Amino acid sequence: MKVDVVLGLQWGDEGKGKIVDVLANSYPVIARFQGGPNAGHSLHFEGKKFVLHTVPSGVFRKNAVNIIGNGVVIDPIIFKEECLEIEATGVPVRERVVISKKAHLILPTHRILDAASEAAKGKSKIGSTLKGIGPTYMDKTGRNGLRVGDVLTADFADRFLTLKNKHLATLAQFDYEFNAEEKESEWMEAIEYLKTFNLVDGEYVANKYLTDNKKILAEGAQGTMLDVDFGSYPFVTSSSTTCAGVCTGLGVAPTKIGKVYGIFKAYCTRVGSGPFPTELNDETGEELRKKGFEFGATTGRPRRTGWLDLPALKYAIMLDGVTELIMMKADVLDTFETIKVATGYKVDGVETDQVPYDTYAEIEPIYKEFKGWNRDLSQITREEELPFEFMNYVRFIEKELNVPISVISLGPDRVQTIFRNEE
Ligand code: GDP
Ligand code: IMO
Ligand code: MG
Image 1 (cartoon, rainbow, N blue to C red):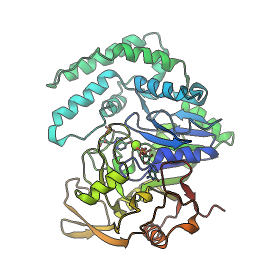
Image 2: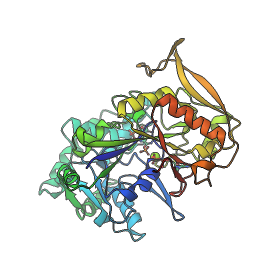
Image 3: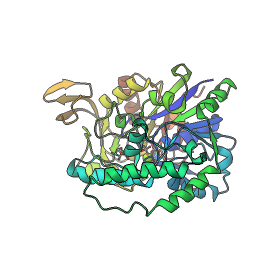
Image 4: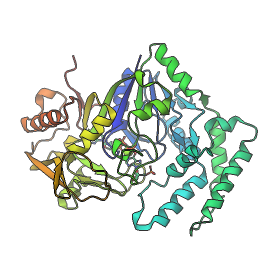
């Protein structure tokens, strides 16, 4: 069996949580492979709403195993809070979630380092979620990190202290006030909670499922345009958000990758700093934010909004090897008279359909305009009922991207999902 993959193709918040929850019905195993509590994946069903940060979005499906892979970074405090909230609804989290011993731990001082680093950057800050993501991955690649499996060792407290002291030495170089002990006892208590979970050799577990004919759905966090290598560096996250990240973040070979679902919003959003070629700093942008409730699921920050960007999508599709597209939130555009799509860029006056290397380049999008459909799409459940103008928009995008749109999401709830060509 193969690992099918769900990836955000834009700057995150495409609706990955909703789609993983919907697809999880037909997967016995769901897995997160990168990122950490910087993610906020929203799920709506049966009148309830959940925002997941660390736990995979298959947790509400009976009989599904949810793996937190080695590529993920875990803040025990946030993980505990999240699990208690899920448990309170009667879901047996411990039976459904296993954690790779090779996943790295976010320490309280990682979060302080994140904040200190952002404060020092001033105007050129990344706009990080301040969850300690960057410093934790730095310690991972710097070979200093603490891993989940370490919590089972006798000298864990000493190792914690060694890393904390290293952080304190670094923090001394910043002009930043902090209290390193403030969260420490809560963190240690949360470590005890983490220990009650099944801590596993994730790579063996994942591959065993595959040889036992159980398919896995890998759930991406963030989006391709925030990838540490291919995003708008340095305004990126610190993990590999592309399809390649599944292999290193779960321990599965590239030959085991099956379908790659690329998720995109029918427009664009971005939280934090960095280039956003189609950004709208006007009333239309404000309308997109209002109608789409574009406020961060993790930080509550207003998301920046803009028109759909095809050059960026083509780039992501190329990097990820997307086999099927999933279009989200077109219902947000229901009342727009005119809808624009960027089909190319003018970079320093020269036309191109490529994303430029230079993060600071002046990019002027080249737009194609579409007539809006002016109809409420949110209650439509069959493709045949979708208005002509909307299908015109869908077909144009499919043709430009050369990948079929197999699922259309028209609202936050599980049931507001249209599968096309289901046969
Ligand atoms: P994720 O990080 O990719 O899982 O996405 P988020 O949960 O951060 O942001 C997506 C937001 O859009 C959430 O509030 C979802 O409930 C909501 N959402 C998802 N799909 C749709 C849709 O098709 N239409 C509308 N209107 N909202 C949606
Ligand atoms: P989901 O999984 C949107 C952004 C931050 C910032 C940059 C770096 O919900 O789509 P970090 O905390 O990772 O060091 O921040 O990346 N960012 C996200 N934006 N959705 C996310 O996750 C994000 N995770 C990080 O806003 O610009
Ligand atoms: Mg999100």
